[in-house]
Image (cartoon, rainbow, N blue to C red):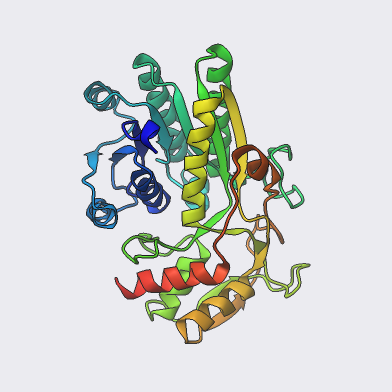
Length: 337
């Protein structure tokens, strides 16, 4: 990949679960990676783990993207070609409790980043959006043209940034923008060196299952077993984080060839129930995961999964990892902690 060997890619939130896996795949493909992360929901040791996997040293800055002066210094020091923007808070519950925190971090932080990018004429960006922009009253599968009705401040913050990016692209044809709507990332790197490492009680299902399997928590609470799904539990689209990361490389390639705005779902296109994921993990780990049913949570939908046809046709991207591989990689990661 000689043509991209010297391209510098800034990854905001590059020490996080998704960002770290993106950085590994970028380095493997020959990109020059610069990480900005304030470690609000990640650990500094992840940088060394990325370097160990790739056998390359990584330039990183312990910085907040809302700090305009620091961001300008970073752009001054490096001729950045493109930005992959993963930095942001991501807990739905926390966003409901403290919406201003989410609008400050996710929306204002993105505005500062875009202002600095504009100043330094770095006008290519891949944005980490979310299936949360579709809301809870939209029937699955979700396509890129499904109604956008986010039901919480986290989802709204993602949609607001999408709208800002569309306006930026309309104002200046030099901008090249990819909006990638993630479904439910799971798994870990096959080395077991990086994976999802949430602070406190996990917001996502698989890390919660993992904490029960390793004995950190006594049992898994499954919210709702009376949905209109095959086994009564909620159905989601669980995508291996490495497949998700590779989608960003495809998006970068698309931006090299096209102008304007690309909007694409990153999911598997298949729904997996909570019970199916619990059973798959139990089989991989060789141990039972104790669970208990609890009432449905307000705002949860019975079924949520992606229509992935556009990403397949426009980006030439599709997932290759199975649920079992995601569980195996997660278990390997957990056992090395």
